[in-house]
Length: 204
Image (cartoon, rainbow, N blue to C red; front, side, top):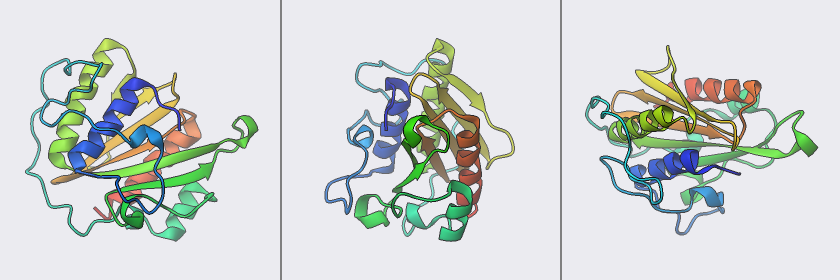
């Protein structure tokens, strides 16, 4: 996976806010996710400075993430329908039983049929709120395209970085939230990410 600093920063923030440790993973995770970030609230990523813009009003109180497994949010049959054929089974820390999961897939029509990776991260609502505040500053700076996404969970936004390329979709539901990321900005892949998010939210 290839990320530009802005979208990588938010992915790393999601991991930090979810309290994920990649030590002892059952399978190696993409290197762009293996790092540490500043602590919440007010995410600050080394080299990027403090988030710009006013803080986003806080949402509902955080709900426990206990018992939630990112690889199990979407049934295998639905994953196959939405993402197509996978290069390998869903994987991540704790052998896929944690709050971070990766799906390796092929992107039809891409150069040399290169493999793309879709990741999903489960975070508490405060993680979503902090990331939304940070993304607001990103959008205002022009570093990436940040948009609100209607009719998805309780609140949702997307970040499109065509230079990566990278597309992130964040959505909250009650005291929990999800981040779905795919290293592509092709319209069909953004639609894949949105459909995957819709299905995953139903299990959150």
